[in-house]
Amino acid sequence: MTNYKSKEARPDFEGFARGILEQWPTGDIDGWELFELSVNYGMIQEIPGGYDPEQHIDAECICPERGDPWYEYTFGPSKSGPGLFSVADIRAERDAAVARAEAAEAMIAKAEAMVEEAAQSQKDQRAILEGQTDDQ
Image (cartoon, rainbow, N blue to C red; front, side, top):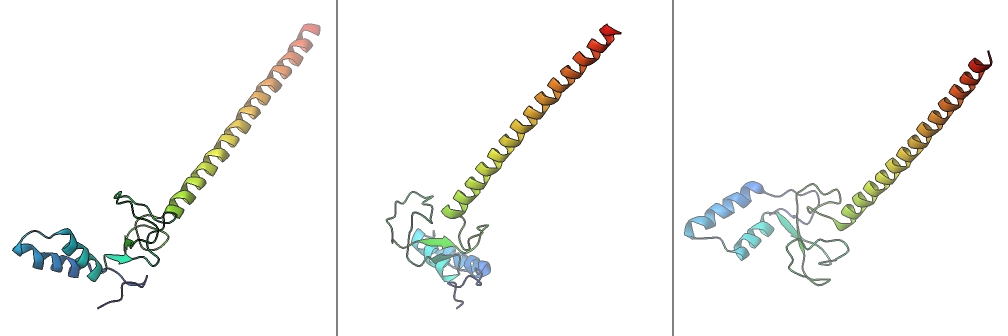
């Protein structure tokens, strides 16, 4: 069997589906059987060190304590490796979005100041031109 602890390993979707179909004709698949199939075919893997609230999201509200066994998907869009979510990635993305928003606000404020300055300059030029026209 493939060692799914390795980041290079990929889940065996076909084997997982076959395992479900083998269980299905005899009745419903209970949660424990689904869990075992998920582990055996590399759909999920146990995270070394267990649950860490700084690194993992308890999206199912099971309220684990630090160090409790924790499993993550071995597939998904996470940049940090296995799993669908990473608290560190979410925080980094949030911080980057805030920084981009602050930079955009600063650029808008600078543009508004430039527009006001240009408008004042145009008023000053009109006043000068009108003053020259009145004198002539």
